Image 1 (cartoon, rainbow, N blue to C red):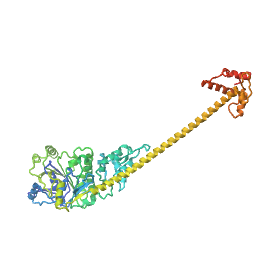
Image 2 (cartoon, rainbow, N blue to C red):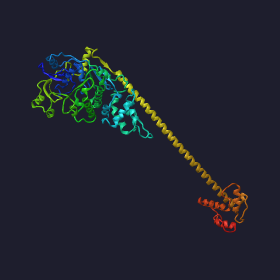
Image 3 (spheres, rainbow, N blue to C red):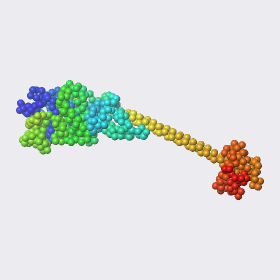
Image 4 (cartoon, rainbow, N blue to C red):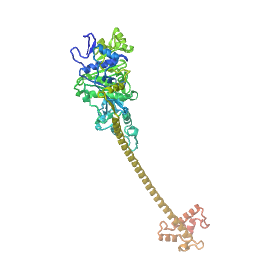
Length: 576
């Protein structure tokens, strides 16, 4: 790259003095509306004319800005400029790309290659951005391990549940109901945080359903893209909303950059990568997911020049100081147009820019003139970067409207496409994934319910068996008590009414029988525990006490002390 004033037109050449093209990482910085986008397109055109494959990986305004290169310019200033440099207005062949989303409109729209991203192609950088954590963290390790293990046909739900399988360590005794809003994952399963975090990272991809199986027919053919230098390859996020989908959009940009780097060995052509408004991707003091994007982009920029057949990059930004500090240091060619005071002072400190040069940054000599600072920190001023031959996106133009106008005149070159069929196909695929895991979750839930019922039944049965044992023991006890009561009653009745049991009346006056005779009688009848006269007398005494406790009447004779009766009966003292 050199400053060529041989024709007195002060233009920029991408070839050095020996006629060779050296790959550069180029930054164009200028205030809004001061031509930085036109300069980026003008430099890109030079690379393309020299056999480079042009790939634009960012669309910061979601307006398909680089897509306007497929049209001839119509702005008066643009046409006047081209006439002044004796350049014929023209257009580029452009292929447009967009990640699949259910937000694509169901009507005729410009022709895009709607693509999916295979889950198995994700690398450490993409996982780090998704997880918003360092490369070596548990979350990133978990994602990478799952990517390595899942099959080629694994979809989003398969992937999430594969993650779940890796982290399940919780107690199996606790019932967990599957959450339909959370990929039918069992609530509370696994190592709490990691599974929850991973599922949260991937929630947006149910709406922007481009993270898909590796055998999807909609995945990108990178070998073909990087070797197709006939077209500009423009990736856009036209159907996404940065206020809601910023992380998803920048995840796609990182994937595109990483994919170029992963496939660089297949490149037969040199490549130039375009990243408009780099500050949006890599701001100074980036926070959240952007700090991981900035780190990954910086790593790539430092490797580009020596990669593949050679990779250059062209980026632009509105504010130099607002760009990530480490990213700034990766550029080998810096072009500065009209700047704000803060940027001018910051640059003055870094490069020791002279006062007269600073004045040119405040008020350039003419449109499209820039200060050039190369990798050796040499400063050249008054560099003109000629405008591209093709149309530039202007605020007054809408890409859809311009495309529709061209479609009316040249429908074969600018076809309109309705993607309703693809949307229905992808909806069906997602629904089948959901249904698969919904049924699986339902089956697990039914099995858990059945298991709980069986455990409950077993518990009830044990309880019932225990109750039966208690009842049996109670009945035995009751029977024993009943037998004792019968024995006491029989002893009592035989003693006081001996004649009723064919026993001899011992005491004629009292009409009582003999305890010894009663013992003999009951023993002969099979009763146990009443083989002696003492045991008979004891049973009679207990029966009397029972009658007294139940407030039954007891005769005066019956209340006489049993020890006396026993002594009287035996005619002497008791031996017991």
